[in-house]
Length: 96
Image 1 (cartoon, rainbow, N blue to C red):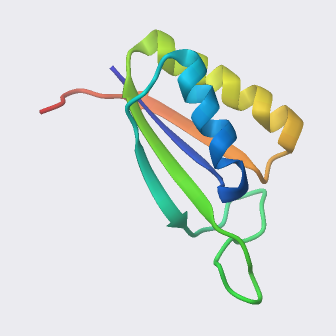
Image 2: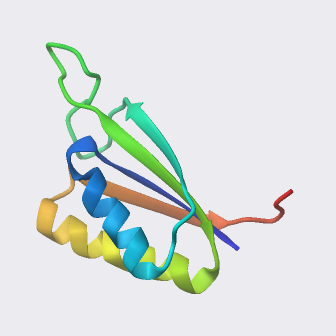
């Protein structure tokens, strides 16, 4: 099993949901109003100085679908730039 965490601008949440649906993933956990700063992006802290919020979408899936999600995110990054979306994938040792 693979875990994929997609951190993305809240404005493109529907597009991220469509990516998951197109890959055949219908189970996920959504973290709304996620705040933070990336290496290549401005802070998204939902303040007057640093406006904006992100979402985190977490998926546990098989390796093949995980790779498909990562490839779709790469394509979205090419369109949106580095500030809009980032994904991380790692191995899951155990699920209970």
